[in-house]
Each structure stands twice: as structure tokens, then as C-alpha cells.
Length: 309
Length: 309
Image (cartoon, rainbow over all chains, first blue to last red; front, side):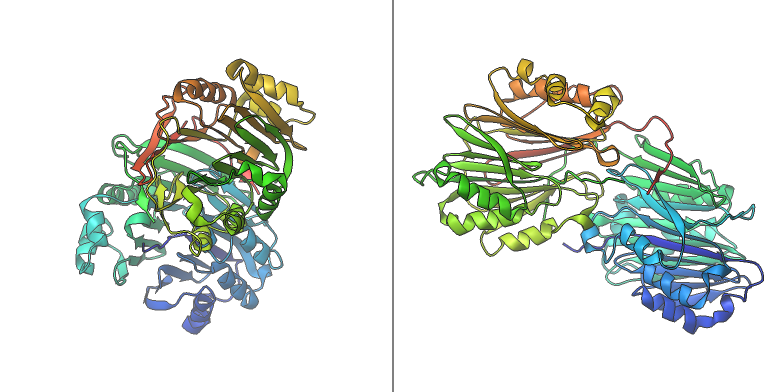
């Protein structure tokens, strides 16, 4: 069995006004930070607002006053955070969040969320929360305990999809797939015509994409392995532009279950027939974000057989 | 936060005909085996067929030709199995199964199911399966790859309940609870009037019970901690006697989700209004057992807040 868990981890940090630009730290700085997470830079795209780095199964976006890094697999994102804090004083931070989703093979991870909190504790003082039932899907977040007031257009939506099914999912698992067909399947050009894209097809399969347009970003990571398939999509687009993209992904990928995580955003998804809303947690974080976690699931309609190990 | 995960593990072994009685190995032998799992014998009851040992958050049943050991928490049941195999040749075994449920804090466990398979591999040759989706509740089983034909009355039902709610669940979490009130709540005497019981109330809370009647057993373990509550009940009673007991437990404990695992048994549970059948896997194991895994869940009807860590 080929196992790869898209056990996503995410850090986002915003500097206080008046600090030197993070973009001017330059690619060598970010490459070194990325290496701390056991990832590497594969390619990058740039516009006036943002540098977007596509990493091995991960992404990094850098703006003048903020950065966002997402990693999958058994990466050690927390080491990238502590590396960053060696160079940028925590006094320069206006906001920092560190997020991790629940994992299904936690024993394969190099650290747990609790371990990560212990790694951050000497550097940062903050609070941590879990949204969602412990025995079901859930999401952990840590944030700096410093008052913060997000910009009005600072909203984020994350869609985490599990057990993708159907023809397109089968294609994503097939040999000899080509990147152009994946782009067409996802309809990037039609759905996000103003965006500049950078994407990568892994061997034997797996796909990552970054897109930027002004200070807006989209990013997607696909790990299609049959037994553990996982697709994540995340963006800071406004809800009315993001919702059609998320609905397209649900339609194409037909996930058996999915989580919608949002910050200061309401997304009304179009669910397939039979999909049930299983869990919904919301929390007004004391850093100015209303965080929501929703878990949806299509109950199995058929008796399935066991999976041999 | 007080965390205790009832991460259940189970081993069952049957000897070939003509072997010396397992009961005659005596308590010191079993105490030593139990110690290998980091558990200890608290008390025991006996009848003509069976010795039932109540362990620290675990249970051990020994018959002449078979034994069954169940452990919770971070016990290392696999070490008890390898200890057993030092004394009883694997050639003497007619059947052996080793089961583990999915864990939510797998990083707190001393081993994973894969690690346990690696520990068993030098001693036993077998097959392993997972029943249930990887990203939801699921159950792992390993079995010896040796043809086996269970007796007609050899059937087992396991009910694993999560997030218990309501007055009785609150009582089980309260200080100053007494064991008599728990017995009445569970209605052991009314539901199983022929049984002999042995039970134990842990401090500050937590309850374990063994019951035997001839060669039939029941066993229950409650870890009521609010954030991670878990109750397991298991028996080899026939379905028509077991089903009313399971239905009583569902009514009293009101679990938010539960798994029903059965071997050569069909149990038609009475589900509360709104409970959804989420997943159902069945497998004819090549050792003569039809194994079924069903996961049920009551979707959260309200938006909940986050849990602070």
C-alpha cells in the first residue's frame, strides 16, 4: 500500500506597520526557512504584491507585511516558524496563527500539535483551540495573544476533501496523466481568468498549484492515492468569487467527506444529494477572526469490503 | 485538560484440541503476561468454564482452550501476546486474532498497528485488514493464516461508544459517584440475571465490569472524561440476548457516535432519532468469521464553540 497523508499544517504571520518588507529578505532566506520544514522550492511566480513559491507538496506566499506557508505530509512546519523567529523578532509581529488538521496516521508524523505548541512556547505566547469533535474531523489553531484587527478584506476559506471519487479522481490516480488535462478539469482559466498560475505534476501522481492576482491567492494540493486521497484548496478571495470555485471542485472530485474552514467568511456550498452536515463549530478568536469549522459527509450507501493491509 | 483515550486493543487465541488447559497455567502466569502490557490484575471471578480477571482498565478471560484479553489507554497488548507465545508454541494455536481500533491521539500510543504487526511477524504468519474508511472510524484486525472453523455458538458483538451525553453520562463524570448507582444505571441484574459480576470504580472516575455465566462473558469499560469519553461493551452472548443490552446502553449513554463490530452475528440496534448509518464494511475472514464494522453518528444539531486547549 502506498500511503501519503496530506496532513496539512499552516502558518500565517503579519508584521506590525513600519517593518522592513518580508519580500526583500529574498529567495535565499525563504529557501532556508523552507528547508527547515524538510521542503524545497520547486518554482515561483511574482507580481507587484506577492511572491508565490511552489514547494514539494507545499506552498509559500510572501507579501511585504505577511507570509503564509502551507505544508503537507510529514513536513516539520514548526521548525520553519522557529527559524523565521530567529530573524524576525516576535515584537515585530502583529499576528501569527499556526494551524493543523487532525491526522489519521499521527504516528507517522514527526510531531503532534501539542509538541508543536511546546516548540513555539519559548518564542511566542498564545492560545490554542480545537474546532470539531475529537473523535471526528477537527482542526487545531494556535494564535499569538496580541490584539489584532484584520483588514475588512482579510478573509480566508479552506476546503479539505477526502476520498475523492469518479472519473476525474480516477484520472488523477492514473499513470501517464498530463498537467494540461488537470488544468482543464479544474477549469482554472474559466473560473479565475485574471490569475497567474504555477503548477506541478508529481511522479507517479500528485498535483500542486499556486495562483496569484494582486494580493489575492489560490493554492491547491492533490494527493490522490486511492486509500488516503486528499485534496486541499485555500484562498483569500472574497466569498462570492471563491464559492463557485469550491462548488466546481466538489462537483469534479466528488469527495466522500470534506471540511470547510473559514475565517471572517461565509461560504454557502452546493452539496451533492445525500451529503450530511455532521459537525459545525464556530469561535470568535480574540484576534479579530470569526473561525468556522464545518464537516460534511456522504454516508456510504453500500456495504463495502475490508481493505487488506 | 485531562485526556484518556480508550484506545482499545484485543487479542483472542484458541488452542488446538488436545493441548493442556490454559486455566491450569495459573494466576502467576497470567499476571506476568498482563504485566507485559503494563496492566495489573485487580480482582477475579471464576466459574466452571472461565476465569475472568479485571485489570487496570482492561480485562482478561481464560477458558480451558482459549483466552481473550482487552486493554485500553496506552497499554502494550502486543507485548503480552509475544510473552504468551514464549510459553505456548504457535503450533498449538488453532486461531489467533489481534484487533485495534482507530486512535485519535495516536502519537500518545507506544506503538501503531503497523508496529504491532512487525512485533508479531517473527512469531506468527497472518493477514491484516482494515474495516471502515481510513479518514473515519475504522477497525484493524490481524489473524493467523491457518484454516479454522468456529463453533456454531462462537459469535461476538462489540459496541464502542463515543461522546456520551445526558444525565447518566454527567453522573459518570461527577465526583463522589458510587458503584451501586452505576450498576443500577446499567441494569446488569435485570438484563443479565444469570450472570456473576465483578466490577471496579476508578478514581476520580472510570468504571470496568466483567461478567460471566457458563462460557458466556460480558465486559464493559467506561472512560467518561468530557473531552474524550468512550465506553466499550463486548460479549459472546447470542444476538437475541445481546441486542437488548446494547440497546439499553445506547439509551442510557446517548453516545454522539458509535461503532458496532461483530463476528458471525447480526445485531439490529434501536437507534435514536436522527442517528445516521455512516459506514458499513463486511469481510468474510478466511478463518471462518464474517466480520462486520458499522459506524453510526448523530450529526450535531447546533453550532458549537471551540474547545480551548
